Image (cartoon, rainbow, N blue to C red; front, side, top):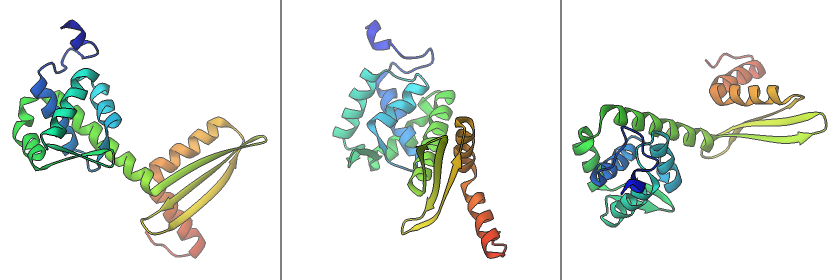
Length: 181
């Protein structure tokens, strides 16, 4: 029985029904369907459950129709939504808040990656970083920049990821001479 608790933190879940509620609740906080690995990554980051409990719970939730596997990504079914809403209070507050924050962060990252693209190409003496923004229909902007140092490359990537919309507005404003706010 002790091996079943391996990898679970002090405030982690060892009650199987709580594990199922945690999965449903976490998915209810996420705006995007998640792959199995992403769901476990969120749970494991908070040391809420070990992989054995997780895999078994995910399988049962899917068989029961509370979760649906759509092209390798999991979404809540109607019963899963009801479970998440009705039973979320059975989870400790710190677990609920941690799972909700992580799920929202994953959603944000998925949305960002869908519309934003950063590619790095190694060149003699440095790298070329290409930062692009797209919507559902077309590419809106692509900017390539040579950077001689890895630290500068990391800074450009981070700045683009954190401020891509602002960077886009500044470029459009500079190129058009208009202020599009």
